[in-house]
Length: 135
Image (cartoon, rainbow, N blue to C red; front, side, top):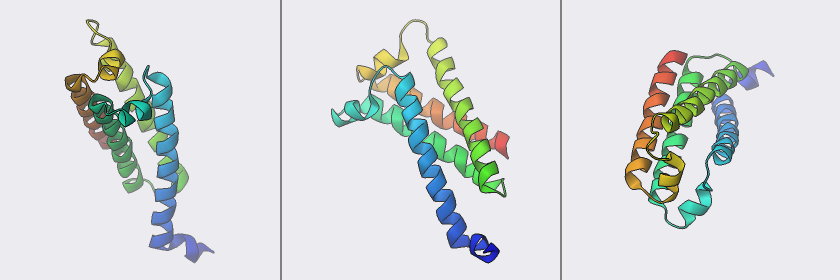
């Protein structure tokens, strides 16, 4: 059985499956903390929401990339990935706090592409910093 789990194809499929599941859970968490409904807004063509959501997806994937590269076990990889996600979520709240002149969620819901772009960039940028910390 050990030989089965050491197979690169099996390990890759395992990491892939766990990360996809984590991504679904993490996107659901983001859905809960935002005032807009991501997938409804994207379906309506809201580009700002699509950019912000795309940045979150990229950010989560990048954090898990680093977690996979630097951890030997699936469980350890998940723990560090969850920790990285918590930091990414914290960054989202800091972004909201640092812009007291307007509400990030409202601007993104109103299809303000500039705010969507900066939100995407912040998520991606923070994921690189978080990933480097996981190394």
